[in-house]
Image (cartoon, rainbow, N blue to C red; front, side):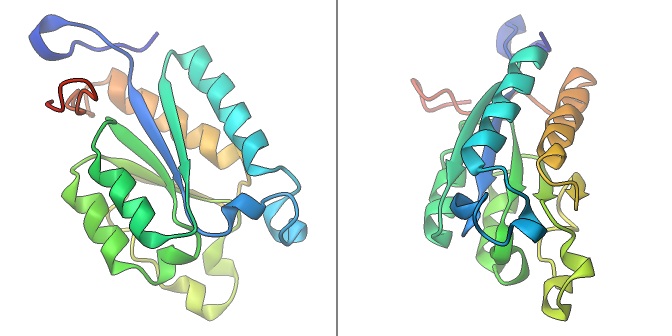
Length: 170
């Protein structure tokens, strides 16, 4: 289990929020030639299994609504995040601002490689603020993102400062 020292010398598992944006609830049926045939539930199950192997706590959130994604980030009950902002990657300054405001490192994931697709997808409001990126690797990108966060946590690059949902401080 990856558990660096937390507040007052206590040890706890890394807490990762997996944030998925618009239309990712349609995985498995939406343009499978681009996004693959795995459903979001299958992707999440595989990631949960990998997290268990690494001793990491994961929480999953998907919304088709920008504000809901931002509100979820504002809870700050996680140490780091894996973010697939989907189409909001190319349009949402507000999501970028929220990711910066919560002061938690995040890894950007995309099932396809947006830069290899339509020209408008080359605009990316997140890539310069993400600590790492995994694109075009389908569901494997999520596991690689989790492993990257685990490596950073174990080496002390991610502070243990998530809000405790019970006490709302951290």
